Image (cartoon, rainbow, N blue to C red):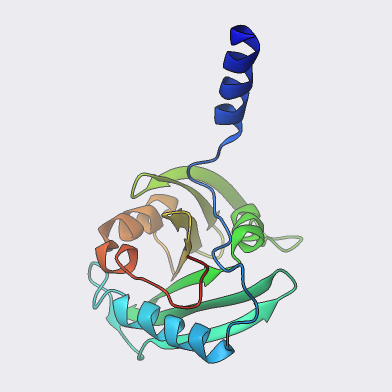
Length: 182
């Protein structure tokens, strides 16, 4: 009996994904204005600068609904000379979106490479196109915030990870949302 219980516990723990995204909205009866307000919170917590990149436009909040349910968040475009960096943070029903973004978005004929990385202690996926000089990284914070950074032109696949690591994610992690199940 003890052996069976021990085996079941080990199997359960092995199946846990402490870095993976989890859907944070369980009650779709919440007024969508609440999700928009939560998106505003995310926009307000986006970094003022990311390394040498400064905002070229104001942060925008959004809320939408996918087949998997409501998603809310914020994004901001930053610039360093002619180079652009977009930071997008989402919450809500993000589990499937996180899996899809992690796979990449290579079009036939493009030379995207997908690499594994660590960003702020979480597993991340890097998508690098050496011909187009584009890079993006996708990772999940606290299993509830899907973060994506896109850099054009990128100097290397490592640069996007360094930019993501340089972000102060404390304000994002401290957010409390009203449109999620408690």
